[in-house]
Length: 454
Ligand SMILES: [Zn+2]
Image (cartoon, rainbow, N blue to C red):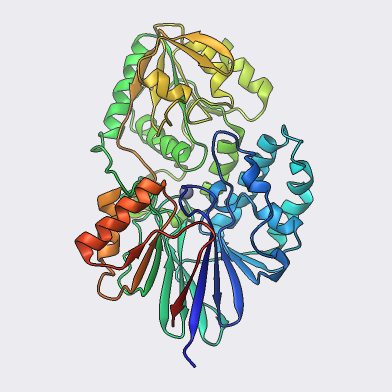
């Protein structure tokens, strides 16, 4: 009898977030990712609707990487009676705990959905007890006919594509694909031999701007701010972007490119995650490995203060200028950065440095667009500070990057399913794969299934 595998697109079809897929093959029911849908409100009702499957019947959950839109609903899976195994790379497992605990902090304010009963410390602990970490390229035999391995996605520390081989047919779930070359991570693995591909498409319909010379730009911005005796505030994402920034600042300070001054990492989550990065240095790229020959501590340098407690955070205001403050959230929608913005944006000697993507309508975006009065968590703030953007940095491959990634496996590909993008972006990439590479490319509907001959 002909063998088949079935894929169900439970989440992340037609949307960037909420990644959640089922693969059924050789009698096993396997989940790939169990992520939160993130919109305007984290506690979007959709996240707490029943799963379209019985959690108790899932044998294994594979987690591609530690962003909450890929693992944020694991506690819900546990609370619904999941008793299978959770598999990821080792760094992803280590990053999962701080990421999940931080999400508890955000969700706990919203009790009307009963999230406090789902997102409990016990459920997180139970999840971790079922969780096993693996190395990239280690081959796991699930059944005599079904094996799995993690390939390097180059997106964030530990990020993986998940490659299933069933009866000789190769099925690849990309997770998120990094915009290689990255500052810290090795490039996305080149993959040449895949039959069925499930690919992300966050930037499926557009290309990134050219990259600024980040280190030089950062150096100039810091020097300008130093000469004005101002405070430089940098809103940043806690995972990966904060560590990249520390890595850059470390190089600038250690090489005496900038004067020593107080630099505050004012984000409890970023501080915890940086500790995980320090444990997994062997996952860094060649450049970062080389830098470690001369400097064992890539994220520690003279002047750096990690302010874990909120009392310590409050005292930053008393520290004389010039100084630098790095804090979350990355788009100034919450977190400690908003206090600093209220305090520092009205003064023309200060600088706001934007390094990450700013969503339309977010305070970060409004400031970037030049608005002189911006509402930040309920308060109007006058912006007189210098506003500087370092452009072209993104954690995702752009449209051309995705195309050339797929081109490497063009010869063997039978079907491509474009997911994890806005519908417009998914459609655009699927069309591009059909037109440019002559591939059978589909944009699956949320909730739909496909059966693949294996
Ligand atoms: Zn991601």
